[in-house]
Length: 121
Image (tube, rainbow, N blue to C red; front, side, top):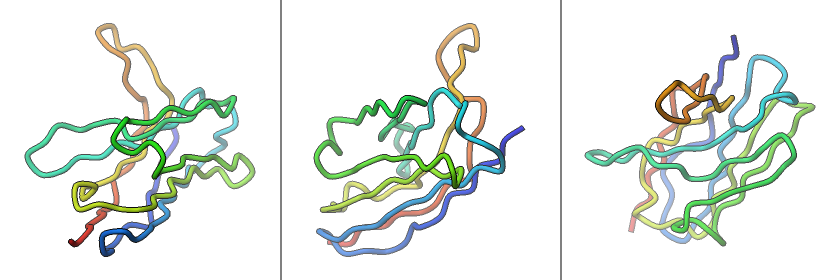
């Protein structure tokens, strides 16, 4: 069992930056994929970025060029550097780890509780 704890959220003005951290209770070196999702009020949860154990990254089109995901296996932590933030980035950001097939779709075995990011205009 792996527990994920996010931190680093807060209130920032448009154009500003934040760095989110997702710290795992155990080793992440063997976890296949770790991802950041976000959920805004009244909207579906959406993938923001993900990183594989081989450090291959993928990003949502809406954040490409502004956000960077990285992982530090020695610290059991995944980061999301968010630059040039926009009001539409406002959401709860959740960390997810260990992508699995549940018989119907790809999902993640472990989820954090989330951290709030609010971008003011």
